[in-house]
Image (cartoon, rainbow, N blue to C red; front, side):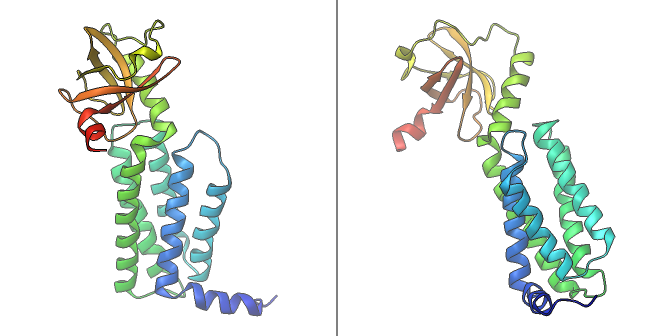
Length: 228
């Protein structure tokens, strides 16, 4: 059975450098969005697979590059879902993503040049790292896992006080342990386990309660609130 005429034209189009890089970036963005949302697999995950598949099929890659790429993605899943905050799995995972993309484009019967393969792998990996680190602290998965780990490890009097009312919104205090994104702050002499939805915060930073939903206390740094 021969190759469909329309696919021959599609292969030529997808194999263009700018199209290949665009599809790989889109695939990584969609994949990270899927990984950093609650533990389900949905539309963005499927679209990510489609984007990766189009590039890999159009370039007729060998199995080695695909295997390395899948290994990198698996390690990123471990970092976001099983071992949050350690960083080792993510570091190695991004290295494998780089190697997988390079091997996928440079190996096989329709291989690209080494220069283009390196440029594509570097561009996609750097872009992915920046996006991953920017979105990670705000992701529902990270917040949920961080809160669970914090509840186990911060057994030092910190609490999710049941008597905390909406009147506490606006009260100010100081970070006592790193908020990554969950940690402890001291407000009016009480140690409270809180979460920040922005950047990670270090001890000593002045914060303000901005939201209370059930036993979830959200704080933001005062400097950011004043600047806004």
